[in-house]
Image (cartoon, rainbow, N blue to C red; front, side):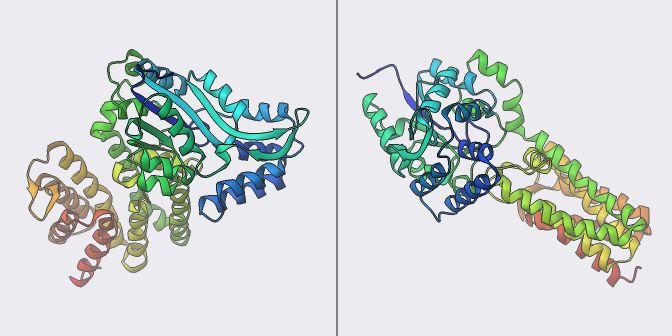
Length: 425
């Protein structure tokens, strides 16, 4: 029977989207360390496209043979659900959307239970074999196949007289790419790299209610309660920039520590980019490195969400090269300049930058002047006035160029080379 009141279909994946983590990994952890390692390896092979979803499920659930349904249920009930899931789904339904949950990894009876708990219209999961309430290791049904989600969605669309242009999907991994490409709106939630690169929108905040903002359901009281201030934050991006620049300024600690423990400071500086890049690889695949991952998520710009943000790496290497090749006075000067002048340029440019630079429309003369003033003041701490003027002028010109994150590296290195060439030491 066709339901004419439904205007769109919202499809939410469960693992990685509604669930924090994946059900099969949670169950594997319960089954023991060896099974967990084997399952994690199989998930990795699936994520890099070395095995199919069918092979993943068959091999993983074969390892779960003998686990009781009661044990599996306890694991399911202990999985953390993403923030504001129930309120968001209820709000979508109140505005005429049909919301269904679909999972190729979670058993069907658990997905249906989750749908009921979250007020979704229905839930569809993978079929698993049981015998006397014990898992047999068998996997079956549409959702054990790579085309399963697409087939179920098409059946739902047909039942409700809808089309793919009326479909919104919230997904996280490559098993959803075929439905992403057909849906009118696709949203990556804690998305893996393959999805992150192709999604129209991304939600990395751990709050599913962001979908309401994306779909612009702005007249809902619950929405306003959930999102007091969120729209302002994402419209102006000031909070991200402030956090970003506070982290940026921390680089001024390097000259202080290097004057006390030079080799230890360099060792730490060389280690930091490695740790950071590991954290970034996890982030762009939907995971979070302890502590560092949440800091990065809170400070990256929108344009950096789909790939690795290299700004901290170039900033650290700028400090490393300065310490290694310049005298302490020059190293301290150029590190202070890159820390404070770049921050001043961003704050002033974003707040009152009305006159665009003709060779770089993304930056303003006001921001460049602010960078020059702050760079000059930083230079005066260590250098004679004449050298401070030259360093400030040169570094502010470099800062105004369209170098993206490379300015963190080029400003200290090139300014230090200039001062060395001028004979200052």
